[in-house]
Length: 116
Image (cartoon, rainbow, N blue to C red; front, top):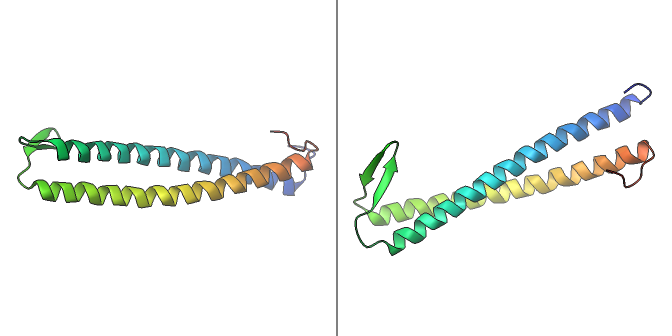
């Protein structure tokens, strides 16, 4: 980075850090969405089930005695996941805007408008 101003070096470092944060937040959001889909499928299957229902606890399957409690736990989990996903989406949007702003600033500084 010889010949580059300290300000531009700082912006490049911020750009790289923002890119890493954006990737991490996106990965977390995708994982949470996967968990939510799995919980939704679990809820659907629980509603269809007519016989005994078992819950996985570690490496054991335990018979569920109170289906309504299990249903309430799944619904609460879905609600929590929804809240966390919305928070991650907001964070992702903010990071993406910062990332694009820094990218534009750096490109202008090195004379490559609109270049990646």
